Image (tube, rainbow, N blue to C red):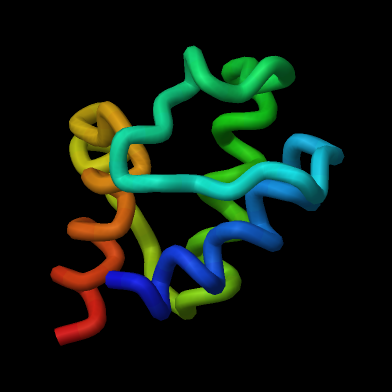
Length: 78
């Protein structure tokens, strides 16, 4: 999980144009000032590219926080 978080931090920094962002499992869209629906889709695309995976719509909708994102990434890495 920590390795995934380390890889997510620069993605969040780039997408939200704030390199000071450090995500935790509890991080949500309410915690990041510039998180909009457009940025959310950019984030999903960037994560898919970084981890060489594809999320389906149901998976994206069910992600409530970064912890859910990490669990979904882990499930696809198997």
